Every structure is written in structure tokens, then in C-alpha cells.
Amino acid sequence: MILIKTQRDTLLAPLQSVSGIVEKRHTLPILSNVLLEKKGDQLTLLATDIEIQITTSTQGALGEGDGAVTVGARKLQDILRSLPESAEVSLALDDKRLQVRAGKSRFSLQTLPADDFPRMAIAEGSAQKINVTQKQFRQLLAQTQFAMAAQDVRYYLNGLLLLLEGDQLRAVATDGHRLAFAAMTIEGNLPRQELILPRKTVLELNRLLDDSDEPLLIEATANQIRFQFGQINLVSKLIDGKFPDYERVIPASLRNALVINRALLLSSMQRAAILTNEKFRGVRLVLSPGSLKIMAANAEQEEAQEELEIDYSGDAIDIGFNVSYLLDVLNNSAVESVQWGFNDANSSALVTIPGNEHFKYVVMPMRI
Image (cartoon, rainbow, N blue to C red; front, side, top):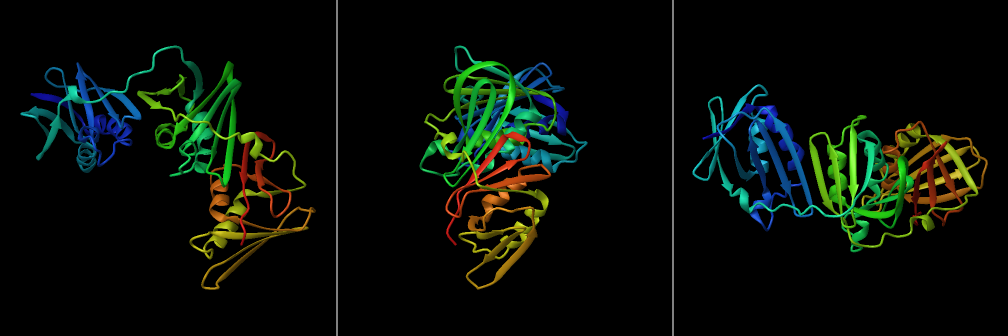
């Protein structure tokens, strides 16, 4: 029985939307699969890793009758990608095998029963609802996600804090060495709620969201969060933990500040970073009235120095930083200029955007 007959891209596009969370090797083999469900000419695809679940659907799936099956997500995706863009593809079920055909190409894939596929239970009860555009939320993530920890034993740092309160939606990420904060104004007057999104959920959202004004609906309960946009429905568990008090980390006042062109500073940092120590990635910033020197050295006694003319009349400061932390914020701030605030060589620095109270980046110094 031909279950699905359609154009390659009609099947490939939704498959790419859901397959990002599929683990190549999982203790449960079925979690390496994607669930295909056909009803009429609508095809629904679902993938999960138990913590996150993504569902999407597409029209135009012709074929004989309805049915459901699970098949290896990455294998099916790789097959479809390798076919010509204009190819017409048919999927047929034949004795626990999925037969994929396109032109004179034939593939036979192992399947597992659709009834065995695990689905996340959708949390019951009232949920706080937020309506924003995909572009707004994607920008909020882009300004903060790079500061998330990767494999910290403090599991709550391996994620991103979303704080709902009043008409504000705030995002905070920290790995203990730097902290990124961004905020946006939303409609409504929401009660305070703190949600910690897992790192994988944040990265997947950043991949799937469009840089457009299309709507995004966010629904948050006590232990689960749902995102609906386009044909995609993403459900994620939340990290159960207490996020650090970010407000205590952000310096309240700074004695010295300078405003500098972001692109100019970024290119200078990138050149200096070439000769940093590969393990510690340290650069020295030497500030004096009218001048900023960026210096780096490595174990081979190679050295780099960049000097920039700046509008600065504060204290002379010689301070060290991990250059990767500085490059992250400069690469993820699509603005003309950034403001840099210091107190002294032993205190954290604050990077902000002139005229924008909704973004702050704190970075701790390092000894060089």
C-alpha cells in the first residue's frame, strides 16, 4: 500500500523541522525514529527525546488510505536530501519495512510500530500565555544564549532563565564567568514566573524560529513550556532548580566608561585572538586617556597588539579577559556601538548598548 506520494520538499521540509532533536544513538531505539501519521492528505510528523517534543504537519500527502509508522529520522532525511529537488517520492509499507521510491531509486528501511512511540503528556491546568513575534523572541535568545553553560554540574546553569513579570519578558544566561541579560516589553500584566529552559530547547528554538513578524504563542505552566509558530508545536520540560539572582551580579555603578564602534572592536579582538594561548584565551586591555590597547601572547612567545583611538578620559586600567567571552557578545549584538564600563582591574566589566536599557552583559576579569 502506497501510504504517501508527494514532492520531495513537501516531505523534507517538515522532517528537517522535527529531526534536530533526534539523538543518533539512544538507549531506546525508537527515539531515533520519527513518527509519520497520515490522515487524508495531511501528514503529521513527530519527534521526541522525552525532554522535548516537536510536532509539525503538511498538506498534499496523497496515497491510499491512512496509517502511521515510525522510521529512522536521520536515514530518511539523508535519503530525501540526496534526491533531486523536483523528485516525486512515494512511501509504501511492506511487511514492517518502509519502501522509499523516487524515479529509479529504491530504499527499504526498518520500521517500529507507531503504537510504541512515546509521546510527552501535555501539562493540564492553566497556563500563562504570551503573544510575540518570532523575530522578537529569536532576538531575545540570540542576545543571551551564548552565555549558557554547557556541562556544568550546576544543572540549572545549563539552560536559560525566562522571567515573566508585568509587561516584561526577560531572558538571562550565565556560566559563572559571564552573564547576559535581555528584556522585551509584552502585552498584558503577568504574575511573576521563573522558567528555566533546557539548553537543547533554546538551541532548537533558535534554529526553527524565523526572523519575521509571524506570530509566536508561548504557553507556560509550572513544569512545561509550549511554543506554537507556523505549523510547528514544540513542547519542552523545564529545569527544576533555582537560578542565581542575576540582579546582584550586574554592577550598580561604574567609574569609567567608553563608547566604541562594535565592528572596529570586533575585528581588532579577532586579530589579537589569533595569538592567544589556546587553553586560556586571555587578552589584556590597556586603557589610558584617548587609547585602548589590546594585547595577546602565547606559549611560543608570539605577541599581538592592536591599538585603537577612543574617546576616553577615565582612569588608566590594565585588565585581562577571556577573549572568547568578548567575541561572543560582539558577534551577537547587531548594533553600531557598544558601551563598556569598568571600575578597576579586579572588578567585572559591563557591556551595554547606548540608549538601550534592555540589554546588559557582565564579564569577569582574569589574571594574565
